[in-house]
Amino acid sequence: MACLKIAFLQITPSGCVEGNVRRGLEALEEAAALGADIALFPEMWSIGYNILGRPPEVWTAEACPSESFTKTFGLAASRLNMAVAVTFLEKWPEGPRNTLVLFDRHGDMKLTYAKVHTCDFDAERALTPGDGFFVTELDTCQGPVKVGAMICYDREFPESARILMLKGAELILVPNACPMEINRLSQLRARAYENMLAIATCNYPDTVPDCNGRSTLFDGVAYLPDMPGSRDTCVMMAGESEGIYTAILDLDMLRTYRSSEVHGNAYRRPEMYGQITDTNIEPPFIRPDRRDIH
Image (tube, rainbow, N blue to C red; front, top):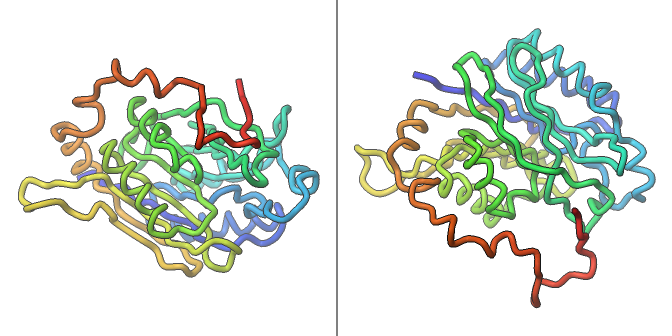
């Protein structure tokens, strides 16, 4: 039975990039000791998502080139024989990006994803949005797994998870930095259910302003042959406190479910969905701070 153990690093940042590297490496050691196959950081770990209420010219100056920040985590992934999804404020020519890099257990970089849906109504307007959603086949100790990523606000848009499902994702990794209340949790549950895939979300603990922990794993398996009605797809919900939480994703159960159930791409009618890509925006959705990005 292929059971993937995911570690959610629901930890408090130190206050500086160098300290977060040290704290992150310590957390990876703890996750590996717990037998994790994948370790996931919360959003923008390099600076602890410390962007709210600070002048953009101050926090954007804290952006790091990808290799200079992530190299140490790739080496740790190889040494610990564990995949690592690390997040950071990435230095980028047009302005910094909110980025995740995924290393496999050999320390090879398999995926780079920059947040597509930046929160342009707030501080993230200073960020450069990402240019697409990507899926990779990740080599783990439990065998290959098809993995994609979203970041926090990407969750608000069903298209994010839908595209990843269409590209073959079985598991979506979601770094987060916001209060995980009932409606946001419901979005994650819905994205997992409607796409028949697993969604692992790692949030900051309640020691971080405007965060409350509650990292989650939804496995997307709503029905089982020997179970009347539907089952709870929430495999794990962490508490609000700091800690390294783990959850098991039953890949065999998920793959069997995906091969026979009715959601996902089985009965879609994409020929009817042309308006989804229409760029025209009508009231009541007009916002003066919306960016036109091409």
